[in-house]
Image 1 (cartoon, one colour):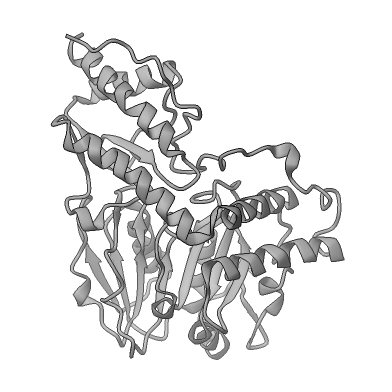
Image 2 (cartoon, rainbow, N blue to C red):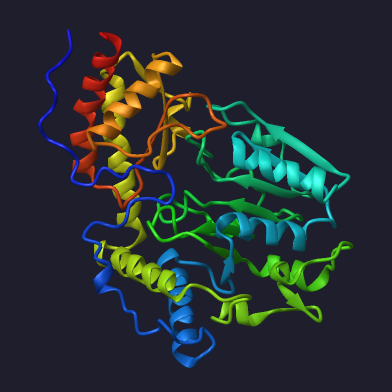
Length: 375
């Protein structure tokens, strides 16, 4: 017997894991559009880019000497720039447990063809043995596996006395999870994730150790202009002061500034993190009370509080019907698991999603499950 159809719907049914929901109260008409139609190299353009760089660094509480740069092609572009520009002088430990980390491994071994690569991997739902990371090697890892819902529990596996660099893909973690910046030499993310910004732009955060690598090492392979972070052996300072490599969308920059202003208004990154954790708690309570749904992440301590991945006791055909029901009723959009991940659900719980919308969604999950299984 099915439960009656719920009557309360989420106000915003956008639970996509990227691009993610816009911030609560978002109004495109309230963006500062004074830069539109102006050159990004004009004073007004450079000032706008410099402002989002400054605000990003201040909100994240970056240590002295860390640099923030805006680069093309989202987090993927940021990671590719870093790998092609910085890898080579040391052996590489590549840690992955989902599709994007596996992609970085493929690029390192099949495109860059580096000879000394240590593959440290685990299946979806698990973390690998990170104690295998060696302090003398460069280390690449994803803080939060967006397609697996599994995050690292902490950064204890990174040595304070490391010789190599740590390169962290943190695209669904920054602004939603505590980041131990002193442990991270390179961090990449895109503002389309936790802040609900628009796609197409990536952010690179460099420690002084990372800058030293860039200025002391020249790769043996050619680098296209769009990947170059140095010129004549020196960091291209403009990337980190508002003079981007290629033309950015000033509309997207204005949108990002709006998101940063919102984070400030709610109490900073600590408040943004708490919102995401409170959202996860809604799903955790639901899973605890329903045997037919489970977290893909096997350990509670490594469960993502942003890209929450769930397995459901349904056949693939039933799962498609389940998702279609919720889409047709306009209560949950874009919640299917990533195409390369195990079948199931992926519900974004970042801070731009309201807890009340997740609470409204939960009865609909029950209704959809019962409707499908009783058909």
